[in-house]
Amino acid sequence: MSAHSTDASFRFVRVVIAAVALSILAGCTTGSHPAAAAVGCTPPARAIPAQQAFVPNGQSGTVSVIDTATDTIATTIATIDTTIDTTSELVQVALPTDSPRAYILGGGFPGTISVIDTTTDALTTTFPLPADAGPPLSIAVSPDGSRAYIAVSTGSATDPGDTANSGILVLDTATGKVTADIALTDPGLAGSTLAISPDGTHLYAVSTDPTITQSVASVIDTGTDAITSTIPLPYGNPTLAISPDGTHLYATSTTGVEIIDASTGTVTATIPVPSGGADGGTPIGIAVSPATGCLYIADTSPTGPSASILTQIDPTTDTTTATIPLGHTLPPFAIALDPQGERAYIANGVNNTVSVIDIRTDTLLATIHGFDGPAGIALD
Image (cartoon, rainbow, N blue to C red):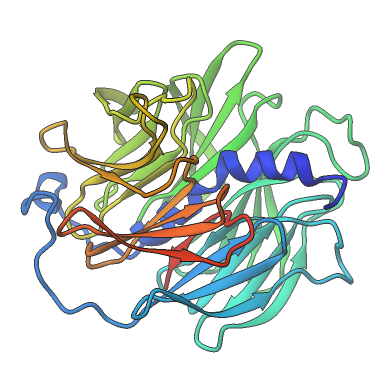
């Protein structure tokens, strides 16, 4: 394990969910928020097409590809280009809606972005991030796949003590060149989560400043790469998800989930969940069903013997509608839901497995083994 492994492991534990949730939500159809959940949290019956799930292994620099028809690992792709970086550890994966590419973010100095062709499951290229950028924490990709947004923290390969270089890098995915560098409102803040609206017009960058125990979401106009407003959030590295129509944001907190009106930036409700703050911290995994608009939170249970659970929330009634055991006791990280809303896949980064949940019956279908620090998950 590299000298950066401890820090990198902490980073992927903290930020894996952001782009994963967005890669699923970006493929959702638009419509009013209540209509998205009109069938409750049970999706309508429909045929499930053949799909693949891409899982970056945070410790080995590979990506495992799951065949969702059999819930087995079909292939493993080596993604780290050792001519660029031999210390990088994979931290996240993002799949845009309208491009057959998966973008794998590697941490370390400098960070990297590896591009996988999802039709051939082959690595096509690896872009190094600028040496003067801080370590990468999170990635989001525009729905058309033309631009990638990378949150970087303080410090860099050229100046590890630099405290004024955190922000968002905007990268042209065709050339690998950085076209803009968006400074956060407070340069001391470290961006830990990115989320992009389904129409690609707004980017939300969550940051936390431990000196004032405050978290904020900066709202960025992707047409101008300018911050247009900020949304105060509960302290504690919250992660974000977005409703299928883009009208609501959902942020995890130590007590549950904050419901935010995207047009005004105001918190309209707080939904307590059984898994909220089980270890005194903030749940990491959050995702929204493209089919129903219901929320899913992955964390550990706060009562009885420690157990990982997936909590289902209906945002139209602000209630918890199901609590599904994941079959192990270690904290889960990232969640991906198929576009039909039939299955949920949860990357369990500590115990090196992926849990498969049947959303229609709220049951654990399978536990897939053979990963090495799964640091995220997304479906094509």
